[in-house]
Image (cartoon, rainbow over all chains, first blue to last red; front, side, top):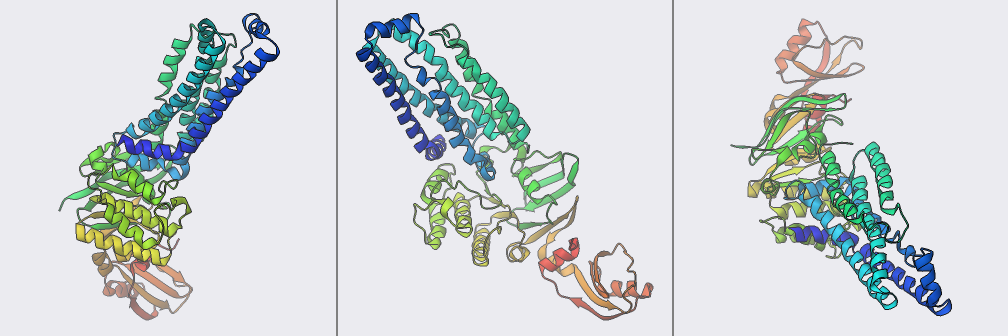
Length: 222
Length: 295
């Protein structure tokens, strides 16, 4: 039955996830094109100097790309379910109480994960052409909270979109917006090193938040 | 005969507003029960409670013996549910939606779905969002028939349908239900449609059940008497046997479960002089309006 749920979700998000992944790849391509340009025109010494001593991150353009992805996928996935209260159709499927919704969420998060793995793979691969492993590792540590923010935005947006009560929706949006700033609190390279594991646990915990909105929907909240 | 649905002392409030109180009704296996009520009497609320989309303030509903708030997947598979307005996943096309649902239901009958769809003259890649309301209703019905459920819950199935599609929907549904011994619990704003479909009727008014009986029994016992008052300003005293009186100038419609003799005795006892007294034959819609009032 999970195949059927995944099939439905795929039909909803396929153009958006493919389009988003292509845009993300273009963004990464642009980062390294710019880097190559800088190496060629300003010289390697200058690039290294700005990175090591001035805290310049050649990948800062990528900062909000995962966040945007999380929001886009959540909206394209869950908004159609709220039109005419179509979520009733999901709840009526012969599945255990929250399984339908959790499967939907697993598909959305899985799709994001695949996009992020492609981004991460390309980023790491291209970075290793230009930099030693130590600098690439620091860059990955810096990017990791941005990627986690993509998942957190996805889970929070699902919670907000599926929430049947307008007041709660507003409050969730407010809390969600504030919560997401945690992932972007410091711009320093590898500053999140000690915090990434904690952020990871927090993000995983957020994945079940949607069950609250679903529970309230089923109890007839309006 | 077993009860497929049993609602006991069902009570629901929206905030302070009482929708119904201590509502009791049953739907017998193999029967087609129509729920009739004016707008705002809680028909959709009752359907939502029955499907577990709303928790009642009090009482409970059982479907196949299970509390509808906690239906097991196996029981859900036995219930086909048509949402008001024939809501379906309109981002899918008619082939995709059949593929999607078919894996959920062990008794899935693709042929039943495609037989109905073949009447629509649409291609398998036609998106549901691009279909007319009538065509969407046939897709929704086809999916329910393919599911082969034991119980069909249809919330306002006639909404948005033209007469042709309504007739197609009803005739197809009734034939299917009778041939396969299915149970149907339904509601519709168009009572002529219900008359063609249902065996039993449940009429609710604000806060209470007015009638639950076979349609033939209700139509046989509920009567309308028309007469003209000799004086326009004659007061017609309400008595318990009178269910409703509609009066326009000197023309009166009186609705009751009592025989003609009781009405005549009432007129004589109250010295009300009338002319053109006659019992009028009613359809289900007339009887419903007669029982619940026009307003």
